[in-house]
Image 1 (spheres, helix red, strand yellow):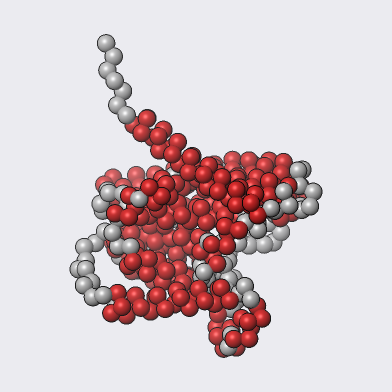
Image 2 (tube, rainbow, N blue to C red):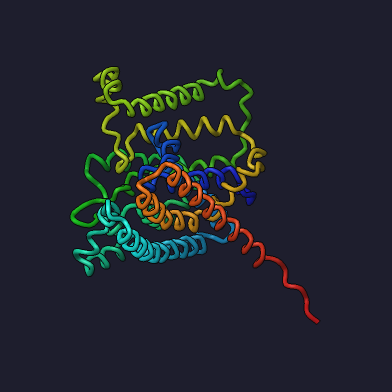
Length: 374
């Protein structure tokens, strides 16, 4: 595997983090321009797919260079770091939400964030927190990533050799899970909002894409409009966009939507990663890869800011989780004034960008050679 970093991956991870932050701030106007408003999938699919891509790219190289044991140890060490970060982040988030709730009189932010379990039964909530069963709103992606990364040592050796076999097994589990109700337990006899038993398919597909992306292949010299797969994917992306936009006008949507198509599409489950969501994301990813084949566009200044955030996705994600309730609090205190909503959304992204810049500077500072002393 090549050791060259693909900045396109960093760019789209950074973009997904921006979308996640905007989507997590209620009534945020900029949340109307995120991916979820123009198709069946959203930033969560980008996050999980690229997590699998980056993980297999990194640990596959370690597997080939240092062997299976070292690769496993490094994967499990990273999983432990993510787990500790999750516990620490949850504690900080609860403190921020309780603080914000004391300054907002019109809404119950504790209830909206799903934290009443901690108030009514704190001892059980602490146990559930350690077992990843207590996941307030905004926190779901990180526990999902923890579970998926913890399972990577089981799949990685076969994935780097016969990716098709792992994808076939993963697809089988994905198809069977909704029928048998496979999911992990959450608080109050609930289940995980992001069902890891089905979302693992997207993680595996990301890993398989990383494997196949390193293999040489002949370029397709045909124009895009003469490539049937591209045309089919583009048509589906446009179709999903039209359907999603029509949801803004329920009367028109219900009037023009055929019953057979409605029965085929709905419900579009995010928990079980509905096939129409999965296909939409894969089609969108394929179309994007075809339209942006090179890497030169990542040198653009704006693209570089997103790339920087993507390079430090864990830290930026955590900051976004903490900023969302603060932005919501400030917006609520100003009666959700449009100008304030725009301001908090942009300031939040600006702070995320500043954190990325600081982490990048700190990394270069710590890696710079120490001058010799006399």
